[in-house]
Amino acid sequence: MSTYSDTTTNDRRSVALTKNERSGNNIVCVASGKGGVGKTWLSVTLSHTLAKLGLGTLLFDGDLGLANVDVQLGLMPDRDLGNVVAESITLAEAVMRFPAGGFDVIAGRSGAGTLAMLDSTRIAGLRHDLLSLARRYDRVVLDLGAGVDGSVRTLADAAAILLVVTTDEPTALTDAYAFIKLSAMQNHDIDFRIVVNMAGSARDGERTYAKLLRACEGFLKLSPKLAGVVRRDDKVRDCIRHQTSLLVRHPTSDAARDVEMVVERLGLGR
Ligand SMILES: Nc1ncnc2c1ncn2[C@@H]1O[C@H](COP(=O)(O)OP(=O)(O)OP(=O)(O)O)[C@@H](O)[C@H]1O
Ligand SMILES: [Mg+2]
Image: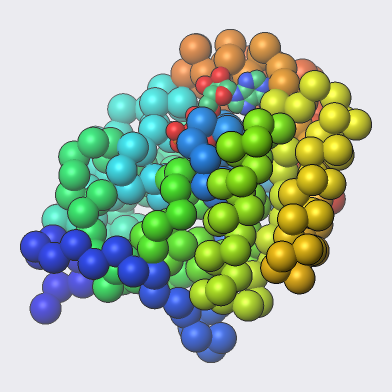
């Protein structure tokens, strides 16, 4: 039977990798729980920052329901994950270039339903192919969809580092906590790191992180480290409106510098 096709069932349990299968030590997943906290923008900016450091980087749009990496980058993909799932091309053949950023992209397909309906076995197949493809790159950044369902967690299980993005909104914090809790139940070895996005200041962001840390330590006995605070910056909205990377239009902006700090703190630039 094919790996991806036949979406007649809709089994969205998460499928965990065994320790031996988990080989994606160059993969960073960007997750959140709550939608709209800046995962896609952060994934794009992380990828561009890594590429600028000379690292061969692939950005994978893992938002299987509402993919929009291509929209944020102004790309017009002539091939995407939809073709991969339909088995007309391989995952490697779905790779395209974002020339202005010097990194590769695998685009998703928004709203088609095909990807959103994939069952857990097929998502695990996609993850398997991504783990193979990742060997050709120095770094792979995987932008995940919102929510905590099994499909998101199955993809997230490929990661060496799982970046959980939150803002200071109580709903973002509770959803980030829920995501960490469910993911940790599935896989005890995950290296969770927290990014506080759209913070008023570095101090505000650290306070937000402290709230999440308290909940994780109190209820889950986990102490995820802070990967960094990214300040709210109007330049982010500007680059998204112009459908390009922040590092193309505003390479020295506050948010661009904050993402550089995240890369440094995570040791991803080496
Ligand atoms: N640091 C920031 N400063 C200002 N605005 C920001 C910042 N980060 C993100 N945004 C704004 O938040 C919006 C949502 O960002 P993005 O689409 O990346 O979120 P998301 O978490 O991927 O959403 P979804 O869950 O729908 O996939 C962007 O359109 C942008 O305007
Ligand atoms: Mg997104």
